[in-house]
Image 1: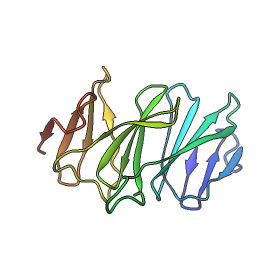
Image 2: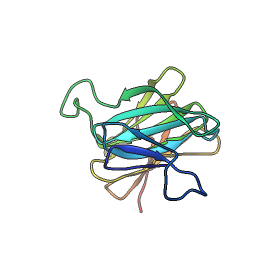
Image 3: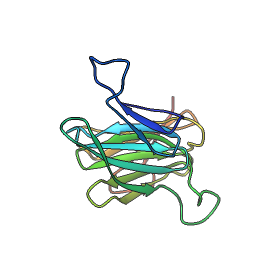
Image 4: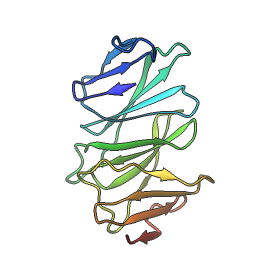
Length: 165
């Protein structure tokens, strides 16, 4: 699977290296992508701050399901900012980092944002930062442009901890 600046996502076969099995034009510059652990869902992050959700069939065919706008309701980031990273935390939920210095938890079941995490000094405006979650599914961590790692509890939207490098 590849996504690129030409707005196309390509599904490749490992033995047929020169010809993609499927090319899906998204009309959006793709900046991040992730498959769910069970391989059923694909999420594409775009430069304009959208997450495009596809369902993947057993033969690798992609079927568009929905899109989510990862943007603030008001303020300077209300038009949406680039998706920097997408990480599935289980088969049904994924984390998204955006260039408005937020991390969002989104469900593929209803295609809605469940929680938006932010920190007092957490900064992500230019880098492709990928969030991660601990093995118990309780703590979310992500690097920051200020050189620190921020950690959130899933039950607390404000950053609980900062770790200096």
